[in-house]
Length: 72
Image 1: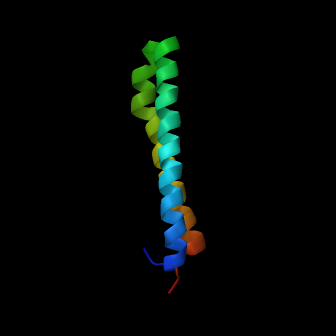
Image 2 (image 1 turned 45 degrees about the horizontal axis):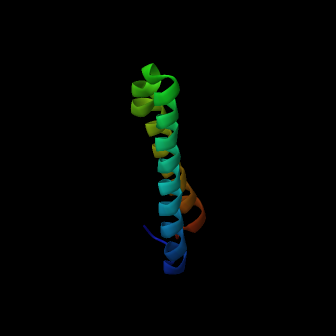
């Protein structure tokens, strides 16, 4: 992607860290659901949390394109 190297040097690690933290929250949420309502685990694992994680990744991409990418 286009953009200044200095922006990439902080955006990529912070984005990676954000996705990692979101994944830890996702796994914790799935454990809680499994403990309290195991019948909802499959749906949430397959749809709800996947949409949230991919939505966050898409949001990071949109942020990069709109705020940091060079527009030439």
